Length: 198
Image 1 (cartoon, rainbow, N blue to C red):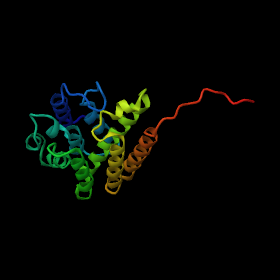
Image 2: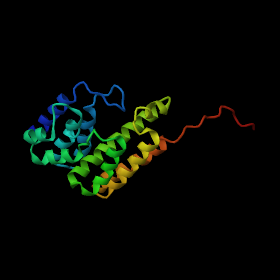
Image 3: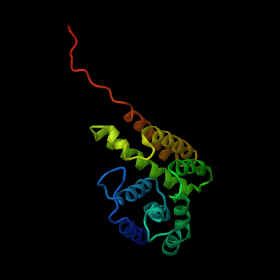
């Protein structure tokens, strides 16, 4: 059903992220990510505030004109609260930010944990697609600050923490995405072109 609140958030998302591309998915407009996260969440019956938070979950940390306070003014305290829980402090190192995300999960509201899980699900499935399509997976991993091993380790830790806080259906999808990514990330072996002698 049409929602004026969601439409305003869609417009804000597209405007805020205009000109940005996904670092890990070269050429992909950044706004595709939050829109996809919001679409994933609609499958699980979340309300409009949670959908709006999904659309705006990256704007305070990635868009100069946005703060959590602006989200509160334009979209309300509940949306801003969820977004605030999901906003990373970019002044910290990659390791600090990712470990904090894991450590913070037990203290998150259910709404924030749900958005975080859908965010993680889209990130992992997008990465798996890139690896499947890449001639050289190392070119994909080179775009990630944590590289292959650290990125996989933190993805597993975060997902395991989230599984305890979210709808089991979303949890099963997230667990499957982690496992599929780990399979796709295994070192590729050269296929022998020789045929067995009969």
